Image 1: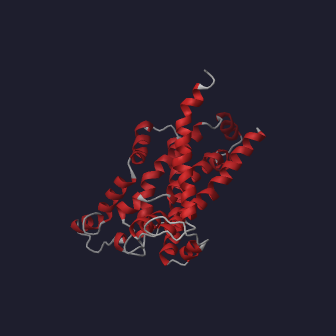
Image 2: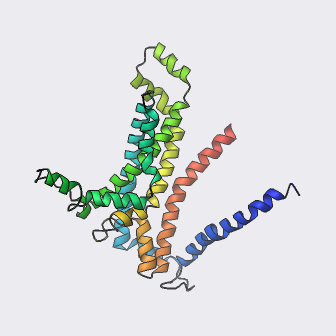
Image 3: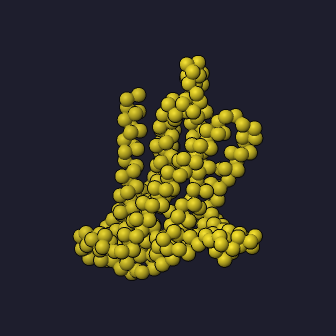
Length: 287
């Protein structure tokens, strides 16, 4: 009985995971091969929905936006996170309080973050109006309503929320570096910038990879931030694949096309996760 008890306790969770996660993934894949519109039907049309998706201008905009948003979001978060972690690693005073301040945004939902930044970046309400009231009448910051610049407001809000989390990851990695290596390098006359660049940061490659995976996942599934900050607008200038999938499936009643976009997103996630899992498993086998 003792041997079977853990399996019995875990069995409901395993069954629910298989049914409500992997089962629905498979069902979505099936729907992407059908002509489903407002309701599912099983009139299979092969990859016609994927061809229609690739010819869709709105999907093209969403795909370009995820490249811009995801690329800038990941690179800026990594840069800010590394810099802040290095600064905090100098054993500065009030480190705990500073670390808490930087980590606090991560405790907020993207809905709260999007709403707050929508107020801040609103030309008639936030930063622009504040500077106008101080006499800087020529100051203009209308990115939120500018179709060419609105995507960068998503980057600003997302970086503000997530860079502190990346900082915490790298700070934990820095604290795990063997101090004797650093002391030996200092005895050889190496400066601290060179030690960080040549010795410490290369030791943090697993942290870089983990941070990249987490940030990529956040970028690909970003939906609530977009809906709270820009609503996908102006027009559909800030559409991302997640918002395209939602609008297409539930607002436009094109379940087959929305399912195809969801499977495309899944493919991108797998393209990121599989090399990571492969490297992890290979590392364990070599160890």
